[in-house]
Length: 295
Picture (cartoon, rainbow, N blue to C red):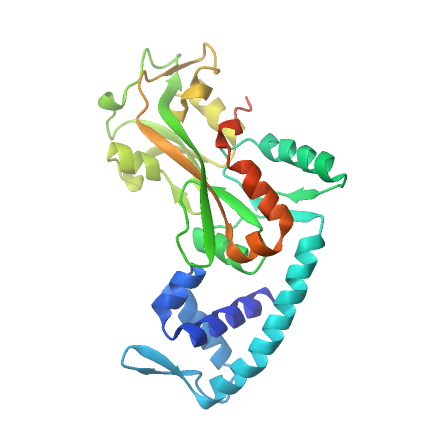
């Protein structure tokens, strides 16, 4: 059911946009995903849906008929779904492991007090890639996500909610001091994995490619800081968090990068679901966000 819904959304968008690249930009999905979706629909169709002509994809007669039926049904379903979403007390969110969950709890309590209701916040959906996350946003499976990268596709809104200096961090048991200038490819790292990406900051700011980064990978903030404390593995954290970690750690005197954090949602969710708009407005002040340290 979910895959068919995705296929239908992609078909309607491709029909309206006329080519794969505009559809990819609109939905934030890859060209391969678009091709796979159209082929899946064509398996149940008596004829091809599109014919390539001068770089564009011209809909066939059958595609015109299918679009006519689907667009009416799709718009009706979308209107009903948006109405449901506007009154539901349930919201699905996705946040990086570095961000403490109690940021959501604080917002939840604030929302319930403000509107005298009992909102349900679900943080349990875990896509395996960026494309899967963006698809979940498009079809309404996710309402919003917090991420270090904005989505510039035309269907999305990305609001920067904070900028945070990041420092290297290491165990005092194994390191007298730590500095970006003394890093080598032989060093080992503690790293988070997030939506299929691992070690991207180390690569971008230290020049060590992911396949050369040896170490420990986790999605748990508790494991992350515990591994750093008990091993020679090097990690990183915000400047403010480094000052709170205590005597078990050493950290660089200077930040090696600034992490930008974004509130990412769809234009449809922001317009049609008041609770998403409420979180969007409240997360604009990113100075209130707390980063995890569960050791």
